[in-house]
Length: 518
Ligand code: XMP
Image (cartoon, rainbow, N blue to C red):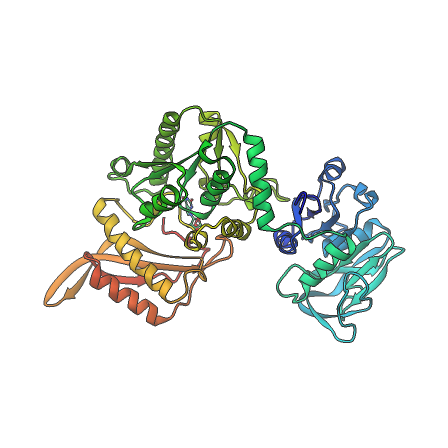
């Protein structure tokens, strides 16, 4: 029996590396809980966090630069193991009296390292053959601090990895967290289990159990409302809460009339039919359509939809009665972003959550997923028995089909898009691509083109197909799908969706385009 999944935890101090989140994900994959904090987290906060070990991330700075980021020196006296990665290693070298110098050649890309000491960090590694690692650095270690010895070297880095085994302070010049370091996970596991003595307690089954217990305790007899969107985050949030507090949870699902084909029915079937939640469907489709009449500007559409959603949600919440908390599916990347090394980055995230609601309604927030990465949320969903279709669902924008219908939104145009999108979706699933691509959807364009059907000239709508690969939606590339798939989808759409006589494929990447068309 695991007492507490947060007992053995690792603190990652972020020096601005593009890989910091990857370090955290790898540590979590090894089933150890970890958190990312800015490099200058106070020593008091670090002590309160009480980590079993520290990982200092890489970063773009040079250790001798005027504004080089230095953490509180007190971390060296904590008597917990420290692993410095790249800049983290250079910091440790510098602060402990060694010397960092500019390497003759910048080392970037794959390199082979030779293991000198396979006792701790490289336990289980073959010392007789080189191991591939991913290097990305300009500076290197010229002289190690006292008490350190080389545990791995490479052609360009005589000190590719170093260790002070007494103090349990280690450094690696390369990035064990990236996929280009094939045995990187083994290195991180050696640090976590052999050096820090962590236990692998962070499993999504234990997370679900512990979170349900804690939610029950902290919510007591109070009532909670949760807005369901049909997406994975809000669904997992709702099911966790349902398991914890049953009928004290009320779920509100607003059908804004901008959903995909049969989406609303599926949500009702699952949450009302299967889970038997206190479920409130608000069919506001006519209201939304009315408010969107003659509106063609994308931002205007978003504003209207956001505003109406709040109005409808609030009205329903008032009917439900005395509610104390609002549950939201906020995820860890949103949390880190707001405290990140560089400060909040300019992302498109602001539209993601039900902006403004808590203030509006003076509700407390319950965010049971705020420590999880998206893949962990999916695993929790699986543990809770949520159907795979829902867990693996592609992202769908809050304003729904409104931002995929260019120009005016009418019932008729919504129907055209829904039918075309449903056909595309069937073909994508049939081709086994649904879970491989980031998103795949149809867009209805505001132009008519000439065609012939039988002997008749037609003048009808164009559907654009958008299929993209992406890791996090910040960048994306159009997917090179097989021509046959495009041929089948195009044929079926033109033959079956009345009002469409042309289908085109979007071959733009992000940037400079965006994933959605509006
Ligand atoms: P873009 O089009 O900006 O989309 O490349 C990036 C990701 O965000 C989704 N998206 C939205 N999600 N409300 C949302 O909740 C929105 O207004 C919105 N706009 C775009 C989009 O589907 C993609 O996954």
